[in-house]
Image 1 (cartoon, one colour):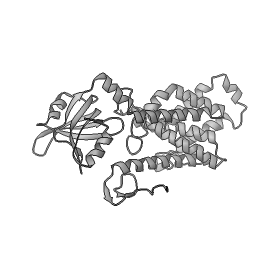
Image 2 (cartoon, one colour):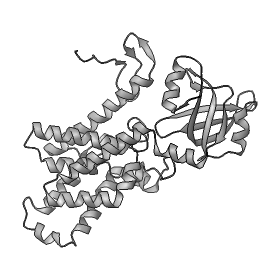
Image 3 (cartoon, one colour):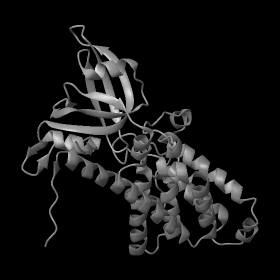
Amino acid sequence: MDILSITQLKRAAADGRVEAQIHAQVEVITRKDAANGKPYFEVTFSDGEGRCTLKAWNDSPGFTYCERGAAGAFVELTGEFASSKFGLESPSWRLRDLRPDEREALLAGSPEIREKQAADFAFIEQSVAALADPRLLALSRLFLTEYGDRYRRAAAARNNHHARRGGLVEHVAQMMRSAVAIASAYPTLNRDLMVTGVLFHDAGKIWENGMPADSFTMPYSEAGELLGHITIGIELVNTLWRKLAVTDDWKTWLAMEPASEDVRMHLLHLVASHHGELAFGSPVTPRTPEAWALHYVDNLDAKLEMLHAAYKSSKQLGPRIQEKVWPLAGNIVQPLGHWK
């Protein structure tokens, strides 16, 4: 029996009943009682790319495991699955704990994900290396040196877009590609500032949406709850900037134009304004060309990622029309194919 990812299992089950195995981490186990008093467990599984929730009734094999199991366990889930209006269902699924080698392979991600995220991070490093402004170059390199491993594991969100281990790197790399292209189309834009703004705009999500080295479960952090990623990102930029202020290079930067303090303030503005509106969490709206460009690049990549995911998962309503997925505004329509 082939081992499927959760996303692959959902697609297969949408076409009818399927016998399958998945390797995943138990994210949440909750004991509940049905209206008739019958006990059951509700279990959420995650494999880093997707998640699903199943019920284990007291007369099913999974119930026994859930009585002694705990959140955080890495398991093999086997059963016959089908899709309903309530999501993925299986009447008698069963579990076993993964061996250490299987657990490590799962945490590493699928070959496709590993290849994509490695290429995306390499692109980020190449884009940083191409920065001409020595202050932004030094700041970005210092950030990647101190936080690169955590940056590579973080998700871009808890829901909606790139909400997976390594999703932040995918999001940032694609935004950088767009930022570089837009800066070429609009040469008055400060390319170095745009690239650095993309790197740092969601850097606070290392704390807000960070992933442990040995888990797919995204913990909640007090810093993330009390401050949010924008505020943390502003503090992060300032902290790294102060570290640069005591280096030997700092003295040579004092005579540069634009002034170092102006560079810092404009970068902070990109972090602060990238949500675009006060109602969406930004403490200030965009006030510069680079800030507006960064906001639209961020929003574009998020929306296209949501559409990409929705085409794979949402209900078919009619020929080439699928049900809307929140927060998209309406039902979605299959795109026009490329001319051949």
